[in-house]
Image (cartoon, rainbow over all chains, first blue to last red; front, top):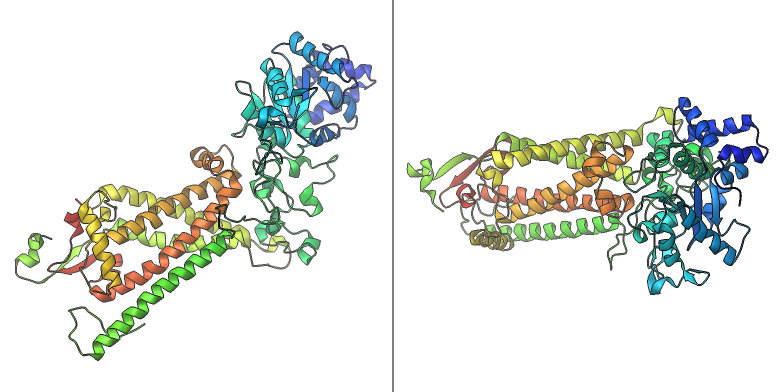
Amino acid sequence: MMKRRSSTYDLLRDHGVDRRTFLKFCTTITAAMGLESTMVPAVVAAMENKPRIPVIWLHGLECTCCSESFIRSSHPIAQDIVLNMISLDYDDTLQAAAGEQVEEIRKRIMKEHKGGYLLAVEGNAPTKDGGVYCTVNGESFLDILKETAADAKAVIAWGSCASHGCVQNAKPNPTGAQPVKKVITGKPIINVPGCPPIAEVMTGVLTYILTFDQLPELDRVGRPKMFYGQRIHDKCYRRPFFDAGQFVESWDDEGARKGWCLYKMGCRGPSTYNSCSTFKWNNGVSFPIGSGHPCIGCSEENFWDNGPFYQRLSAIPVPGIESTPDQVGKTLTVLTGIGVGAHLVSHVARSAAKSYSKESAPPAGGEEERK
Amino acid sequence: MANSAYRPLETGCNYGRKYVWELPVRVSHWVNAVSVTMLFATGLYISDPILAPNGEPYQHFVMGRARQMHFLFGYLLLFSFLLRVYWFYAGNNYARSGFPRVWKACWWKDVRGQGLQYLRLERGHVHLGHNAIAGLTYTIFVIFLGWFQILSGLALYSESNPGGFWDKMVGWLIPLFGGSFTLRMWHHTAAWGFVVFVIPHLYIVLYDDRQYKNGLISSMLAGFKFYERNDLDHDRWIS
């Protein structure tokens, strides 16, 4: 790789990026982080002066969609800037080196930048049977992860796999796959969930760390608040249709053509925190709801188990009950009604029998009046 | 029970009238009744919005209004519950008569006695406070269920303002139940508990009112119940 302690700007200049483009990038990323325009100089200064942060990027049990998203960061000269902004010293998918060389690089960074490098983890670690379900170079990913995290400054968990477990961790989870937060303790962990996360969000998190030398403010689930602070629903351009009560009922109905709200098609927008409805995807072209598909809530915990995707309510997760809450509720209501009705009928019948036999009833006993 | 404490009976009269349900108890009851009804109706609409207004969205606010009402009555229910919790301590003994006293033999005796009375279609005793079965039912279907609905509802409500007041107060319920999706499902399921409760509640109130003819229903408006010799007084039964 490149000379490691040079700044981002140095490297960009080496790559032929002009100052104007560089400033535009800094402005974009400042806005993306939700900072005021007065903060642009701070970002520029950081990019110009601070040595790039060495990053080790590990791949565990995953599909590489996070990397795919990352290298498509939407800025005009994305590849150059994004990949050079940080010092991506080790990434077994992207780097040119292979085999033992690769492992050497990892070991060297761990030694040279002890306590100073960032560990980015994509995918997660299967923990069952000693972690044999994911091995790199004969070592289990579980061990590699623990070893590399031990001397890291902080751990970034890229994507839902590393943050929450995602598909591998869904029931019944045969390999015992666990998210990073369950494997690594005692290190600050930033969760950047999404399947995959938005490229600008990934870039934004790294830029923030580079600019301010500290980790961004996190929410309850360990996600950076600046990107996961609002629900998709609250920034959704279809929200007016939701409030009006205009919903798509099937994929090809009039509402679907008119772009009505996808809530009834199972949209998870109301319970999903992400930036999709603000940043959108692929250079801000669109996002799932924009193309007529409900949000599946991929940046939320257990999203894979909270199925089916096209329903707002799941069946009740109690063994033996395969019904939705409404089916259960209606059944119980009918049963209660039958019970009450039976009592009423017995009461009326008994009162009728009593009055027929002309027995004198106790003071307030059975009258013949019925409802 | 010792009837001698009743002045009318001491003076040789067979009937008496007693102020049982104080104003906060009655207010709380009716606010609950209205709120739960409205919450259930609007909740059903929110979970499955069946109305489909035509035209442009600026012309309508159906879902918005339904949610607004849901939140409004949710707050009303919360305040009603807080008032009732306060009155549990501040009110007369009848305000506490529903508490299931599972450690007392006389409470279990009343569960049995009241149960048999309903099953045998007998008149039995008038209770001035709650009978043991009623108290047990209210504890489960009003207090536990009600608080669960209030707290889970506020947790779901807090999702629109992460880090806000309600998020700090009850936001922890969301991860506890495995996420917002699961919590919503339980919130929805539990709502049916109110329906399951209201059916026998209405029936038994009408039934007992006809059986006892002691002003049971009107006591929920005016607060007074009538009694006669040998009626059970939970005023002393529970204290």
